[in-house]
Image (cartoon, rainbow, N blue to C red; front, top):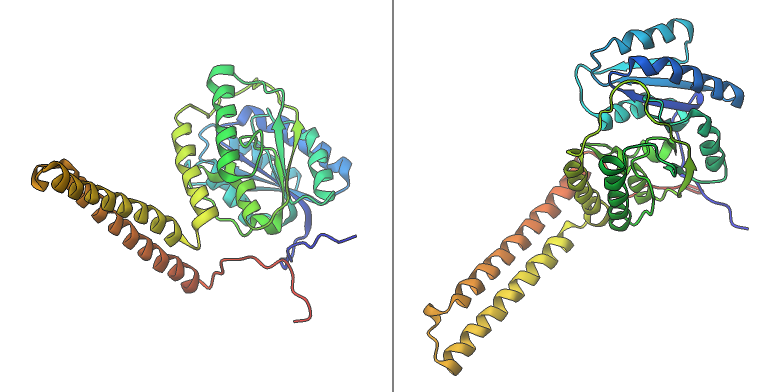
Length: 327
């Protein structure tokens, strides 16, 4: 039987698990979350740390976490100077985490910490990313659930990573796959797709979901536009990050071909129907399409140069090595 080869992890990691908790004005929820997470993790007999990331709270949430730190040295706190968003909070948590497995969880107590052992069990089965699926979701149907179902369907088909709940924060990751990912915008929800790009084995399991009973939700429908724009970026990075010339070249060639066809139509109409070229709107269309096609091809060439500059100037490589033998 062939053995699954893992990406080599060279960092010193003193903990088995890092729990990463971004929060914004969740003073009323943090105590319950802390007690539930520590209770579950203590029962697992694993070394762990809990990293709280304060994303610009105004309600004394930071003082609540500082109280945890006084009695528990496994608790860490990262404070932002202002609200930078959940993606930035998760990125900061990943950067400072020292566990071999990262687990992300919301601070609003809608994710259930008792599901953490199920995530870890899947990791131990050989998966690299385990995503929670809120099968029985306790959110408003019109403003939360319908947009979520639609977004998950679109994201799954564009990225090729089929998940039913990209928006569920409760996820587990092998650290070595996440350390190679740089997050921007609202891209935390696409982490499984990013990890898949470098060869991670991704799966999804049902998890419990509770209604929010304290505090105020931070989600609104205006996030839909941001997610769609970030999805375009993910698709570009997954398919054309190292070969943008293919995309721009194909589009440019298509437009140039349209211009040529429009030009042929102008010639046919002149000699068959007697229509003067300067009176034919197809002439303008032919010129416009051809010039636009050439410009897009040139943009593709510039993009190719930028990609090479990006990788070579920082010593980055467009690949991730799993393991080396006899070198």
